[in-house]
Length: 165
Image (cartoon, rainbow, N blue to C red; front, top):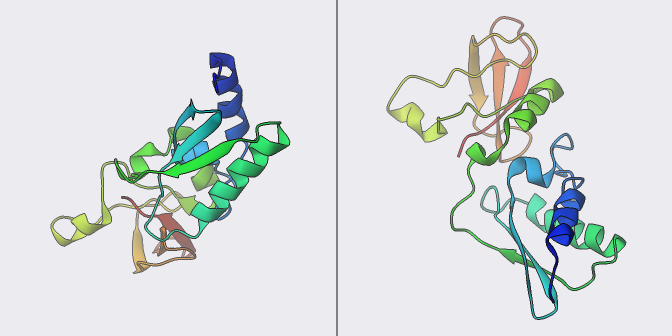
């Protein structure tokens, strides 16, 4: 299958409309899950990287990609999973981080990883409601495995924080 450059661009545009099933304000492109689009032997190959090990949304991502492309006349699709390089929250674009916060989920703090709490000062997570950094972790696991549950000590609201990797 020979795919023209404008076809690849069209496919990227189609994938931009596929939402994360757990966080509908983000697309799979916002998350950086889609790594490459290529073609080989009459097949379109979409390479994706899982966000978290065992993330239940990955099967939905695969199904949604295949469905979206079939709806648009692209049938010979293979989804290829790659783990190298491993996904990181640094792949979430800045616009998506803003949408996360507007949705009520604190975006990942750039340049931090949650395990670093063992060796340095706690991460300053900003409350998506009142924007205070006077917050504390309640549980390392929030509504999904990729989020932690926090509480704002100023407005007293609980909120999810998208954990860093």
